Length: 460
Image (cartoon, rainbow, N blue to C red; front, side):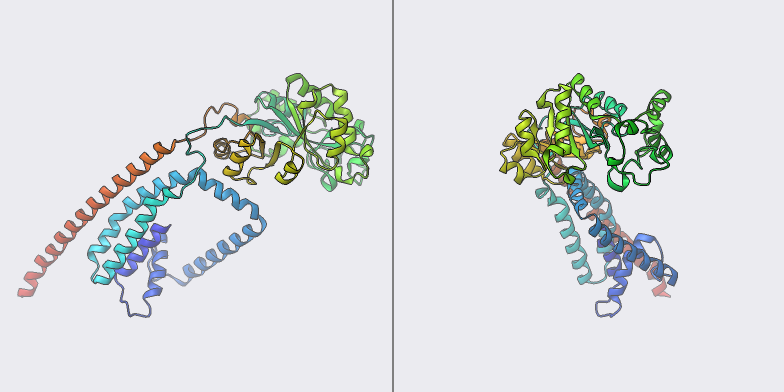
């Protein structure tokens, strides 16, 4: 975009009169002239559409900045993943567009225009050629960390209905090291797996409205485990296709998905024990408890003990009754969702959103032997970036996409990148010099030809 602006400014300057009050207006409209391929004297309707487009983009950007403030961190991460390639693309674009720039330079009628054109072009070129000095990407490193382990977010929800036994079985096929799930208590105090709570409880992922027509209040405390097991927890997945992946399933898998029910926590613990997989979970209603021995934490711990799973396979995340849980189940791995709490308790396991930590933060934590799990990571480029940053593990909906990755999407050693950067810059500068001389020669021929055509006319 910067190059386009520069070129359009040059087009405006080509016919500029520095003392004209309308020269600035012509420069501004030069950008629209170049980008849209329309005449500079735009129709009023075009001007209205351009104004509305600018207004929509401005309001949209402002709205997204307000509502998705945290997501701007992802933009920064995307630049870390793509900056080296954007720089190389900018070098190529600069080289290609230089032909028009040099043409404008040689045909400019005043020295002031020529100076402005060349100074602007040289300034842009310097930025493009030297910006690798400030590019900082974790994938430019001599020491590539080990590949992050995979944690199945509610199982493998791209391949099966979330928080069902089929979903967790599919995640086992991805070689996950842990299941991530959500635990709630039924009316008869039995832990079961379900993410949605409060007013959304059961409505998104089950057929509760069709099964219990007489229920007005769909809350977890209104359903016994037996009633929950009567619900279908798979048909919604086939109907809504939340990740657009249903078409990749076989007919047998679709039939299996359609028959899924709401699982008990005990069922998942038995599966985890069988496959030597850890479990990390949220207790969705823990904050509603008034005392530990009547809380979700207590009944969950009792169910875990009953399953016979090794205590070190439980990654305990809920913070409310952490101290009580540590007393009755000292073998659980305590996991924290913020650094300050982890440090205060002498912990060494952090579970946070992928954008909460910079590459440097992750590296520093790993040097202190802190395990860092980041959620929720579904894109290859993001997984590759976190791999280069040194993340211990990632929670993902897309374990099948990362399972067979043996290398990040890209990784360069600093000396390799430096050679690539310098080579591209040198080649581009040589081409720019050659194009400048060629354009100068063409311009001389152009003026000579114009003069020869004008001589007979002068004679007449």
